[in-house]
Amino acid sequence: NAGVMQNPRHLVRRRGQEARLRCSPMKGHSHVYWYRQLPEEGLKFMVYLQKENIIDESGMPKERFSAEFPKEGPSILRIQQVVRGDSAAYFCASAAPQPTDTQYFGPGTRLTVL
Amino acid sequence: RKEVEQDPGPFNVPEGATVAFNCTYSNSASQSFFWYRQDCRKEPKLLMSVYSSGNEDGRFTAQLNRASQYISLLIRDSKLSDSATYLCVSPSGGSNYKLTFGKGTLLTVNP
Figure 1 (cartoon, chains in turn brown, green):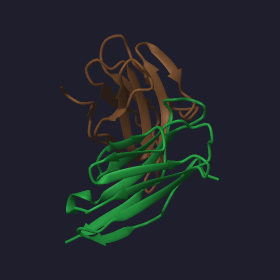
Figure 2: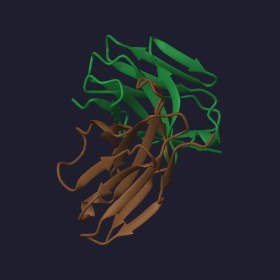
Figure 3: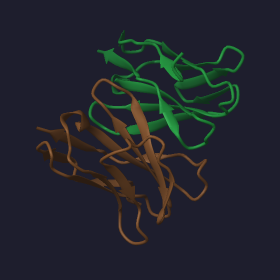
Figure 4: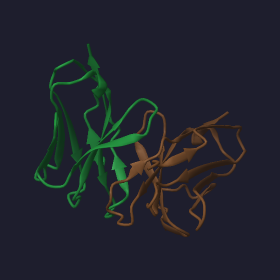
């Protein structure tokens, strides 16, 4: 049973470019969460999605960031016009149909903005 | 007061030692707590869940004190492989899914 998959594992972008981060949840999981870990900081919740629905995006910056979890395919976290402050590790987690279930984390995408 | 606050560490202990980490939380309504471990540049992995007064799993014991809003993690007979950052975690904001992570406590077990 494959775990949560994320790609790319490392992403380098220049300021002003777009970054697209992908997350495939564990088989049978329908809840996806995105977290960001800035250098020397704890993980911070960004957004919670179910298939085709954004349930809670209270942790997402108001501008440049968006997330989706389409009916088919992985969840995507999109960052437009990246800035140096966006450099961080972005982790995706998934959970089974009951949202109280344990969240399992993917290996993360390390975004570096030059 | 931060939602979840941990010992700053770092902790350096010899193999075989017993080490304890402390964590305080501010949301008295929180019902569940977790300890995750995170190896350098890796994802967090669930170590233990704590729903009542405590939980024990082999060399690891987690205790919860709701009156003091305090959680602890005890590791007995430390192994080199226990070296990692230990994260205290609780759902926040009235939700049961929005995990709030402490900054973590770095443990290094030395031979």
